[in-house]
Amino acid sequence: MQIYVFYIQYFKPKELKLNILKDYFCGSTNFKMNFHSTLTSWYSVNKRSLPWRGSKNPYNIWLSEIILQQTQIKQGLPYYEAFLSNYPSVQALAEASETEILNLWQGLGYYSRARNLHFTAKHITENLNGEFPKSYKSLLELKGVGDYTASAIASICYEEAVAVVDGNVYRVLARYFGIDTPINSTEGIKQFKTLAQSLLPLSNFGDYNQAVMEFGSQQCKPQSPNCELCLLASSCKAYATGSIKILPVKLKKTKVTKKYFNFLVVDSDDQKTYLEQRTEKGIWQQLYQFPLIETAASVSEKEFLTHFKNTNKITTPYKKLTLFNTEDIIHKLSHQQLHVKFWIIRTKQSPENAVKWSDITTYPVPAVIERFIKNFYN
Image (cartoon, rainbow, N blue to C red):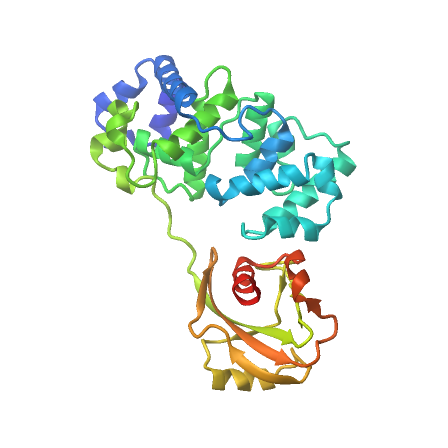
């Protein structure tokens, strides 16, 4: 009766009718068997064909899980294939330069993932004889690997009995059990992990974990799930109470701050420009950008000239300065909203350490700058 005791302790049963508790927990073993057998049977028929599925290679699973953090499969799949093609092993990834990895990562965002990927590959190669740790606890010691990724690798590659809890799993469990504890609260993280762990089958932990995640992604979708065709609908608390749209509950995000970026794009007569590297901690660390002037608000051309004359960002004499985009380009990050302008500075001479426009794609740059380069130079 482990799952029954857990429910009594955490899920406010006094607010639930007794018959609902009986439906779920009269014979918890049978309930668990029905729950995971339903999901794994559904998964065997409906799972998508993805290149890392069926693999027990921890490098493949680790690579896919890091890429898919904060990223949809449709977007992440080409990156996974590109990384595996360029770096077919953890040793090959370790031997690459950070610039090469950031360049291949370009457009995925959350670039700390790429830096952690490289750091961990070097650590495994240099300190662990090229062998991935083989347990959940030891996997957690790797940089950039948290509970979710460690659970995925341990269960899929080594059949360790650890539950995976990602956004899809939160959604399935919150709706099925009618749990309104915020999933991004300390209490919620503990509750859902404990519940997920208690629901594990006796074997085939990797397949079951993937089944729950896939079910959340394809069937129990965030918006407009097809509950009429759901195999769990008859015992789903959220479906019975009409609370599908409000579960799972999530605490409000951190307030988004606005920043105003003005990039200075040198365009010399000899087809060169100038880039600088962001070395300080924060967004886009180690990526390249055009020289930047940050202002307190969006500025007009007249206002910008005042800022430009008071900076030493560009010391090469210029012929003409024009605004490339009349409307601010809005670039949204997790906790920031960037309002971006690109100012074109025409010069006869190229500045010191200039970069050829024809070589600019070899430098890893943020997505907003990558899009500008394609529009401006091509």
